[in-house]
Length: 232
Image 1 (cartoon, helix red, strand yellow):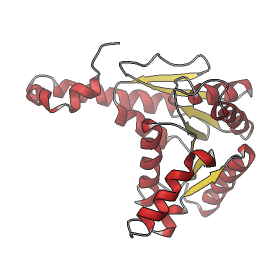
Image 2 (tube, rainbow, N blue to C red):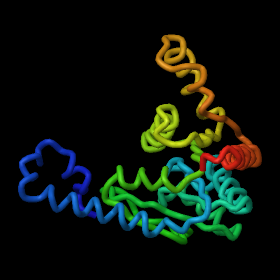
Image 3 (cartoon, rainbow, N blue to C red):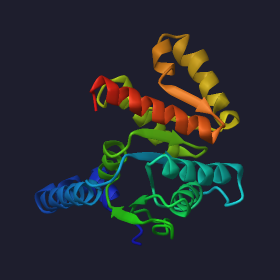
């Protein structure tokens, strides 16, 4: 893996003079990544994107929860999409695969990353974050977010923003690990809501639970409701 990435070279202002010689070719590479993603994932069954830390240990509570979640989603008929890395992502992929479901990994080029985990059935490696993010949203009926760091928070808030602004049809955003997320949720209520930066309805976009069965049931019910209204 090179010390710099394709995203860095595209976005770093120090490379802006390259637009005459290189950015046009980068645009074609970006297009090719979209085409590869659309072509590879077009025939997926209904799917759920699962996010969480790559740094979580296999015996951590969140990894055990992710494995159970992956299995339960597979049994409910959903493919499981993760970032394809270790930790929570690997646990969710493993749970889905062991339960006989389809396990998808969408990897990303990073200087310190390690490739897709061994439980991925369908895998794509992306150079560009924004292409990868499109695939997480386009092919998911729901997002489930387990404990994680900056990358996990990025995916969480992007999902909420897309639903809030009606850029996507409303779909479930589930937080698992209520103790982990309690501080963030309190801050959102006390700082954002009280200061008028968000509304009560915005907080209702998030469903919090520690129970795998409840999370899957919530997703299935929301999916059925959307189907009944003809908005899918």
